[in-house]
Length: 332
Image (cartoon, rainbow, N blue to C red; front, side):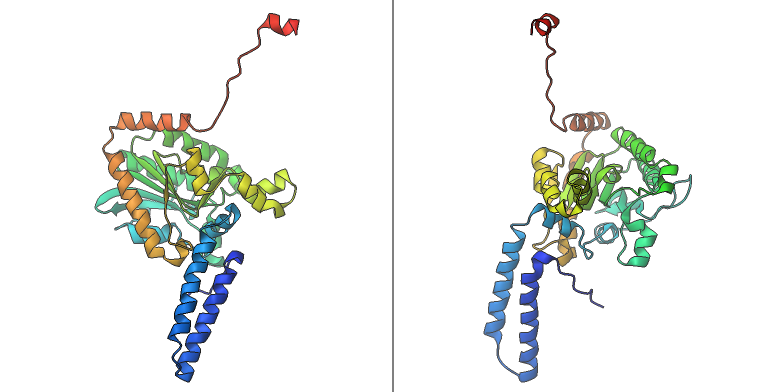
């Protein structure tokens, strides 16, 4: 069964052309008319419209694409890109958090440990996956698997896609902030290569808890930010309606993240978004993973850790101000 059509506001001109094309093809079949010229004209107009729309997306429009309900999720990529994936469950402390999945697999014959934050496609699955918002046990499960990877010298590949860690009372009672903080510390010294890829939403510490890596990639229409646009707007302007303005101010899209040095590379998506051609999106992601993994596997462990340390020391911009001498201060 085909997925129901979901159209974003800025895609409506393209959707209207699709409806015209469907109507014309139906008329051709029913009336036995030769309308190949008209069909070709509409198809050409559709391609031009698609290019015009998606080459000039705003930050907020890219956020909407990152949240598209038909966008490929972690398991979609895992089943397409990797072979022999064997999911492992539980954090050995509390329970199994299904918002984070992971286990060993093969990437073109190379054994790896793959992790992913997983959303649901419908209400029932979203409740099971907690809408992709991990609890503390999810981060502890991820750390257990990463330590297992280190033990057996497996590189770690982490697929990031979450609006943020779960902020509920139970998560706070079980110390979600501490679980994320421990992951940040342990991933910074994990003795095996790590590649993190933001495939959709990269929200706050919920994303960062599985994204401290030697190489951080981001899909073309994904975002990575300290806070959601809605959350930022509610804080700064007391109104979530300012989310588009916040999205622009946060510099959260792939091109701006690369320019700021937050990510190391952008994985291109098919024109219109990964949801329109999941096979092509997976092919691009696999190529990026293999290229970076080949480089990382050739780096000695100590050098790898040193480079990882320096990578995060260089993030951000700051300015040192020389203290004013005491005599000068008095004279002033």
